[in-house]
Amino acid sequence: MRHLLTLEDWSAAQIAEAIAQARAVKAYPDRYADALRRKTLCMVFEKPSLRTRLSFEAGMNQMGGHAIYYDTSTSPAGAGKESIADTVRTMCRYVDIVMARLFKHEDLLEMARYATVPLINALTNYSHPGQILADLQTIEEHKGRLAGLKLAYLGDSFNNVTHSLLFACPKMGMHLLIGCPAGKDYEPAPAALTAAQADAARIGVRFAVTHDAAEAVRDADVVYTDSWMSYHVPKDKAAERRKIFGPYQVDGALMKQARPDAIFLNCLPAMRGMEQTAEVIDGPQSVVFDQAENRMHMHKALMLILLKAAGTLPG
Ligand code: CP
Ligand code: NVA
Image 1 (cartoon, rainbow, N blue to C red):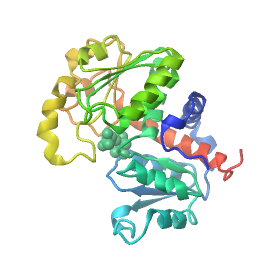
Image 2 (tube, rainbow, N blue to C red):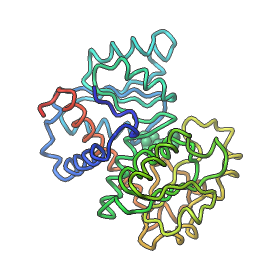
Image 3 (cartoon, rainbow, N blue to C red):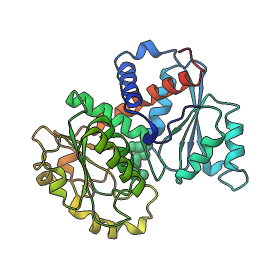
Image 4 (cartoon, rainbow, N blue to C red):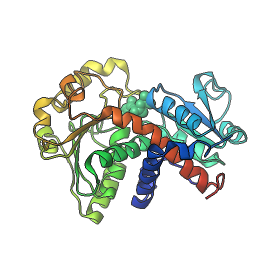
């Protein structure tokens, strides 16, 4: 069964296929109006969401299918009454495809062990692959290519979004610079670093982690940041993290270090005055709402690709 659990095990060709499919559903939505007729998606949520929930649900509706929002806080599993294994084996008897937004990545892997239908990672503490696929689509739309571009990511880097960038960007021929504070709680996890280093060496692109924000951003084509207060970070850490990540805030002066035609991305939700200033996210270089829109086109593409691979749709 083909799933989307992390981009670590997706090839450059598979990533390019997803982007091409998302481009097609965006350009010709009517051609896909019945593509998932009578198919059902179960959306398992342990954490909040605006974009992921609405874009999957709207996307499924637009292709003639149905989406069920399943909040684990009202489930037997959430109440400690049912195992992940039994939950997933039951769920797969009702629906054609499942997406899950969970705290622990290990719980997603446990779901995958028992899933008899495709499973999509809709964010764990460790990775956010669907987000980065939509981001690559957005970058390609604005820049016309991926290979040879330099992406600079600033801020919290022990982070799902950063890890997924590490798994995807070098593989797609992009130079990747991470600007973050020193320390294991702020830098990418060792497994993601190793994967990015190996891909960068194989493809011949630059990959580095620096603690100097200006150095990371210099001559970048794409500047990307994410929340300093991810969903799983306790609220009482806000003051401490504001201080630690402060030097990595993307403001107008930092954007000037990038190429004049650089674009600015944030997966959202965003806090103005934290990971970036209002002048940047609301300024002319920001493409954050194109990025948010592309989540829907990419989710439609992923459902089509995985359901075809599962033999549920004609090839
Ligand atoms: N970017 C993203 O996944 O947003 P939501 O948390 O609103 O789904
Ligand atoms: N890193 C963020 C991404 C939100 C879409 C979080 O985990 O909350």
